[in-house]
Length: 325
Image (tube, helix red, strand yellow):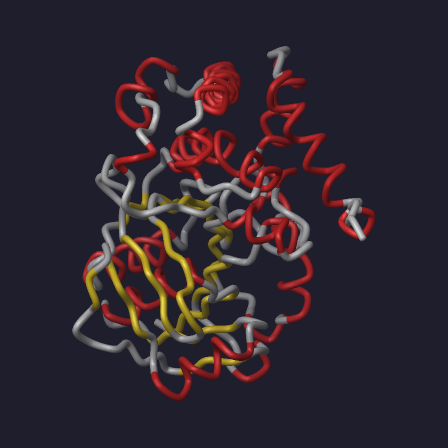
């Protein structure tokens, strides 16, 4: 199976490398030219859970444009949700009438953007219960699954009865064979909302404060704010019919305030890097998605709306920030 990773940054590199390790024919496409050049020349070097992987992973190709790759059997999209339309339009040569397309970004709404380009039989959506950061061009630090998650990837075709379901199942096998536990499941949307709770807790706050997750969560006021953001997201998820209770979420995942003095490894979400580099964040697809769905379902979301609006103000005024002389 010929597979392209459209958006081969940290997470794209992680999932693509494990598809390659599982036996796939894998190509990276990303605008980060230094990262792509390093992978093309020297392969991808990974550290997983802080331990160096013994083998460098060499892709079948790495390019800054899909025109260098050509049509694929499957395309996994891992650009940010607010960049999907531009990335697909700029790389149309990756897609044929038979290509299946899977979006695995953070947040809610990525697959809806792709509805303008692909039908439900060819389109898949999912979520990553894993993490990665770029240490240097061609080198990443990652983990294939979160400690509290049996799988690192949950996904499914948008149409559960898609005649192309065997191809989605084939991707699951490649990931699993490559060492990244994955599941093609009809509960993918529920898992997306489950992960969204993590995102609404951390991403907007990190973008605003430029703090690592552990610093924000290690402060009593930060922790209380995170609890309220999570509560609202769980209430919206329940209104959508998902069995996502705040008490269960807290018990199974993040049910304690960080003791900052005992933290050995800091986690910095992509929204922090976006705001630091004056890029637009995915806030509309994270806290903004909770607000949007809450309005539809009659669920108040004042905490998420405040974070959403503050981040939007910030990113519309990057060039107007006060700077003392």
